[in-house]
Image (cartoon, rainbow, N blue to C red):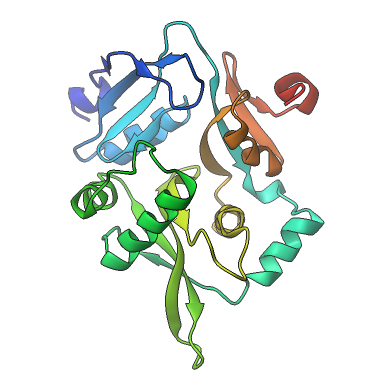
Length: 251
């Protein structure tokens, strides 16, 4: 193994406005993922709280805040609640396929509808089709776009209603970014269904975890991640099971 793969160089961004907590600033530490050992490096970094974006692995490194906590679902121990079982049943007709990480106009159009409805004015709202292609296709690791399509009357795959850019790691699936039809008249909860499908997909593949990115206790838009138990959080002493009283408090 070459020295650059064993000893990656890390850099720190300048502080900027925090997207989760008003009045806070964020700073990130990052390193480049490239070369023949990119998968191994990405796996190792994900276990200590890094996330991937294109060919970069990053994690928060804020000066005065530790609110962002890495979380992962223990896939083979997940038992859906009655409401989650209903959601799985309601969407079991969807045709799900793992596609190579190649962007399409159909995916981009769906992303735009999703962003306009769910995250207007967010950091990705100005993303054009080339930006989207860069996000999907510039992956130095084993990645897929998981597509969710409604069936045509003849049973073939029809309209795209959901998608997720997903990395397959040595110990699980990492959901890099998911999006879905935001105003579907009959399929509420598509985002939750996509997460549960990933949990089931990981369990079938005997992969222990599904990485959900960061959880911020004080951010209401992050609380959906608490629905997927058992959940593990990354703390100063490593990963530990989520405890409602200790970790969530009065959220």
